[in-house]
Amino acid sequence: MPLAVFIIGRGGLWLFGLVAALLCIAVLEFCRMMERKRFRPSLFSALATLGVLLLDAQFPRWGLLGPGLTAVLLASLTWQLAHREGSPVVNWALSVAGPLYVGWCGAYIIRLRNLPEGQWWLLTVLPAIWLADSGAYFVGRTWGRHRLAPVLSPGKTWEGYVGGIAVGTLATAGLVALWQRWSGPLGPTLYDGLGVGLLVSTLAPVGDLVVSMIKREVGVKDTGTLFPGHGGALDRIDSALWAVVIGYYFAVWIRGL
Figure 1 (cartoon, rainbow, N blue to C red):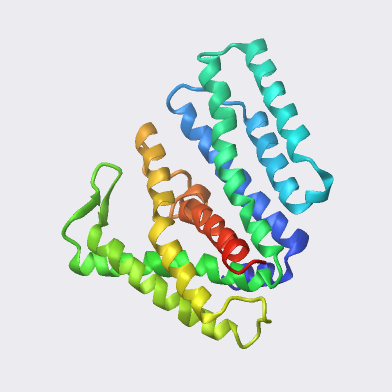
Figure 2: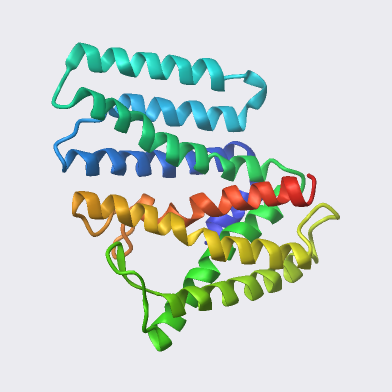
């Protein structure tokens, strides 16, 4: 955590490198999971898609998104035509869809950090989902009775979900009250903390269920082993992918940054 806070504070290529490394591992985990179902997504196409999305977020003036994605799509189709291994259409779709989801949403970490006072917005949005998760866990363990998604994630309950919303909203507002000692006028306010906390706590858990759906499809408990006892990179960023998108558009649309 101290290392993450340090890198978020530095921003720039420091943050770009950390995000790129984490998302590359997440995309690799996705491809490996699909191979368990005897599909063969192209890892090169997947990483190329991810690279275009991240570079566009870090260097928007390059105008890389349009030509870069076009080149990746055409090259990935050509690759499948040349190899035609297994189910080439499905392989092509997985080569693009997985990294598109991870990369498009994950790139908002960089976009959010690059906003005015972006370090404080990022240090509000990411803890919001962690605080909500913690609240949901403890409330669910204590009072949980009604299953939220018994097929995808049997451990989650409606009581825990509501508890996570309450804890995430209030704790995020408290965190912003602390950040206001150092942030400038464009940083998050107490009301922003309440709004971000409420939206992230309510919507970001869907990201967890999305990855649970993928894992259920291929029959695995964790996406990888990067964090022993806690799963892989994709397990760790599942809700954060949604949280940073929510936080970015809150800052841009609500605060007008």
